[in-house]
Image 1 (cartoon, rainbow, N blue to C red):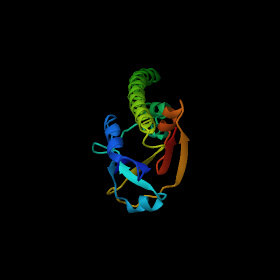
Image 2 (cartoon, one colour):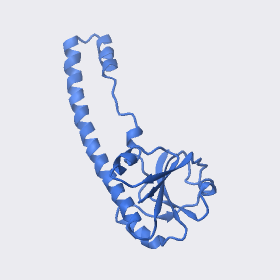
Image 3 (spheres, rainbow, N blue to C red):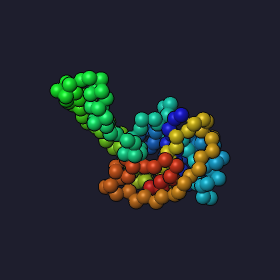
Image 4 (cartoon, one colour):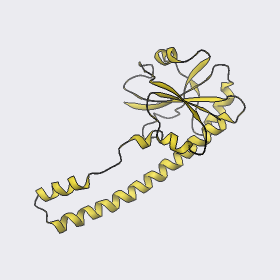
Length: 180
């Protein structure tokens, strides 16, 4: 299973010029044949793969929807059941929490940097003068890229200063239509 970010653009858009912009942000615009998605697009929209590498697993889009918590009380309970003293449990979990906090901070910096790249990509596409709208769709594929995908809704998003938060909270199988 792999996650991919795909895009929609007007079929009449100058794709070569937009692809050049996408590549400056580590993306691409390669036409993607997906009969199920294409049936759900409106007339005049074209569908593209944006991923340059293997997949978009671990990417920042939708990161805020992933559970990021640890049940420390459950960990303490399990260690106590093993016969650990309260002091030993507190010491061990204190160290684990410090490491977890440092790892979480590093991960948030990575996500923030990656989100900034997406913000720049969307901004450059919309300010290129070539398009007024860019659609993005996240999907967790279980098989090939032409598998059946059900787009749950189309959501209009005005690009504002809140764009990083919007990108962090993207939901899968929703076509987000970004416009200036």
